[in-house]
Image (cartoon, rainbow, N blue to C red; front, top):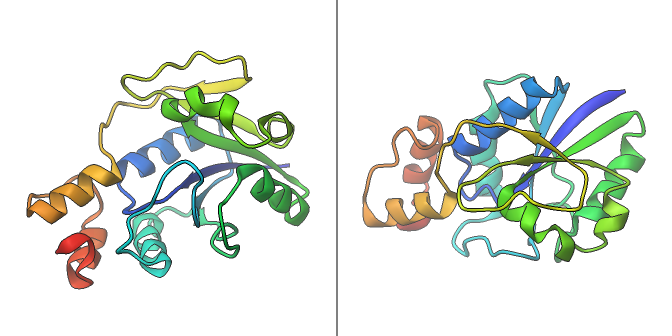
Length: 189
């Protein structure tokens, strides 16, 4: 059975926080791979209007290319409309019947779990892996495997704000992604 961690997100842009979480979960749970799964239209948050899916994908490819255990799963980008995790995981189970899936969520999502679409069905399809985030509770009635990840308080929205303001984003995301943002005039550069 191949053990795969799924890290979903807007990745708008991807940053070292995403990579740190993925690598810690990969090694601490002894998984075979981590699949980064960019959302099309997450029901709970908006991605920035100015960046196309193709740009988010290219930034993600640049971010993970050095790690042979990381790959991109485009399932949600291939479908239109809101992406519900339960629907995505049903499709992945059909495509990969010999895979066990570990769905990685931050503490902000742990609090939100009771409101997830068909969460009781979803917990039969995945094992949830929770990573702590400052200022969020990890209390829940759902079965969650917790992984300690070194604190790295960075977010995509903070990076977008810094880029728009002309502030440095060095050491927050890979240089190749910073170059891509500049070259393609993303986030108001």
